Amino acid sequence: MTKLRLAIVGAGPAGIYAADLLVKGERDFDVSIDLFEHLPAPYGLVRYGVSPDHPRIKGIINALREVLDGGDIRYFGNIHYGTDITLSDLKKHYHAVIFATGAIRDANLDIPGIELPGSYGAADFVSWFDGHPDVPRTWPLEAEKIAVIGNGNVALDISRMLIKHADDLLPTEIPDNVYRGLKDNPVTDVHVFGRRGPTSVKFTPLELRELGEVRDVDMVLYEEDFEIHDPSAEAAIAGNKQVMVIDRVMRQWRERESGSASRRLHLHFYSKPVEIVSRDGVVSAIRYERMLPDGDGGVTGTGEIRELPIQAIYRAVGYFGSPVDGIPFDSERGVIPNNGGQVIDETGQVIPGVYATGWIKRGPVGLIGHTKSDAMETLSHLTQDRELWWTPEDPAEESVDALLDSRGIKYTTVEGWRLLDEHEIQRGQQSDRPRIKVVPRDEMIRISREED
Image 1 (cartoon, rainbow, N blue to C red):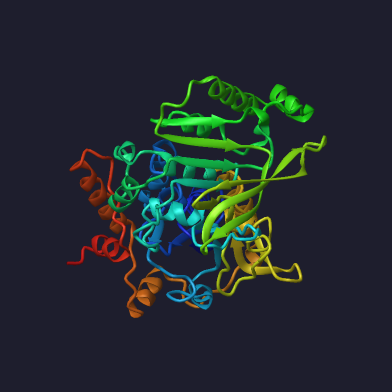
Image 2: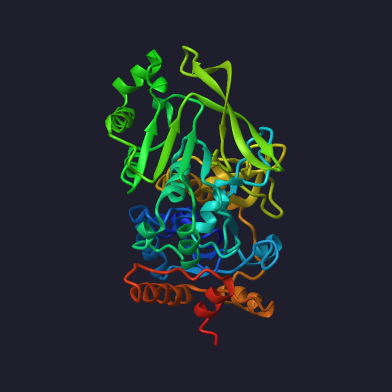
């Protein structure tokens, strides 16, 4: 029987789901899968892109752990694709590769002043508070008044982390250095800006409700944003349950008594940021244009420019993929160009043996669960493309271990991840917390490899 040796680059949900679906699916060939991950620990954005006060979402890790613990898939962590292992290496040892490298950079926002000191990307902030090993250990939390641009769940996540009292995060797996940084946060007001109306937000109702439950924080909404007549908004409330719930939550907030909290979170709708103002070379204010419904479900500018003093700004306008060595890249969309997961060249021709799944395939849209259906599409092409598979010179599993060992690469394994996982949980138990993450990369590797 034919045996497929498959490499998957990226051990987040997209890569792990693709491996699991292939192992468990119906097929007329054997399969051997190796996962390669540039971080020492697996799970990608579930470990490093979800707020620590979201344990329900982090529960997805339990399902991913079951896949890796099943013993059908090998895991190689701390492997940098393009240097530690290359495309030519993969062609020598595998029949095909699936890239599941995700999207971890911030999308650009092209307005004057966005590059000023005091202007930050949401993805960088998330990486910091989630203990990503490749970002600085400190974060410049010095502003009392902060603007957040964006009306999606990431905007809510970073707003909540900015406005929340650090002690309220102690029951979570927040890293020690992040707790210390947030403990000294002088913030009093966070202003969230969206250019559309309240019924056009991309928040989920659950995320929105959680925002209103943060202790010692007043929710501030502005009546002018709810007095605008917009038939399309009214239709959305009447015809979409999710929008109806979001509208109900905001109505409840507007009826609350406020003024007693030490911190405030403001939601500004129909507000399009147009410029970040500088004073003495740093962020000092945000200028935004007042918008109105255009009658067709969108918005149009009024020409009215407003200005709000701030000392820091965060853009949460989406994530963006990064180029992958030796593989075509669409720099406009931040994805690997593909046809249903089959990677294609600049002429639209399918490149043999190369596939993509997850956000690097379709862009940063959809929730984590959507990666399963996405992986199924890619795998359907992979399994039907036998004539396009590579012909590896040395497909033996042990040849990959030998290659990495010969290059002196300190890779981690599933067994090593278990050691690190147990270590972090034990650290947490000492402080009555679910876990305390190990942040430095070299320490993660040392624990995973049982090095002194």
